[in-house]
Length: 211
Ligand code: GRF
Image (cartoon, rainbow, N blue to C red; front, side):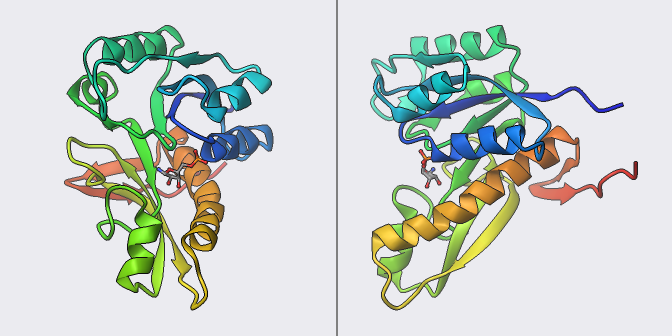
């Protein structure tokens, strides 16, 4: 018998194309999961509209009084909303805030992030611009478990993207996003299938069970 779908809560601030890639992977039967709710820290973030279009409960939670972190009353409300929707794993998808201990302890080793570079290279903001400015020949994307640092948690999977001579920040970011849209559903699938084992800071991928 098939396992129960993994209930995912998505946190975002912007376009939500990664959230869309999860919605599409679920619809196509590539990911045994359900997006239980979407939460944004920006009232008119397009990610909320996408979610509502697909009948997914979507909430704006005012992040005040913090400018760059998720802490205080907003963090409490986010955790309560995720719990009220039965969320088992949290996917940060273009969420422009640093998440703190409260959320990480509520979902231990089950808060994931997607970052637009091959970590540990180019952590932080606009990583594709950093890679281009540095002159990297290869960059990519990383899905990792979120820990207390910024973009430092155990790596689940990465996909490489060659940098082309004529790349602009926009063209490079677009090609990285194509890989993100493959990587995030794959990583969540590994989580949904219980195939992620943490060994120190390394993620070991358990082979798929035979049917
Ligand atoms: C992605 O490039 C992701 O790696 C970064 O923020 C961007 C979000 O894009 N964390 P979207 O909102 O999913 O389209």
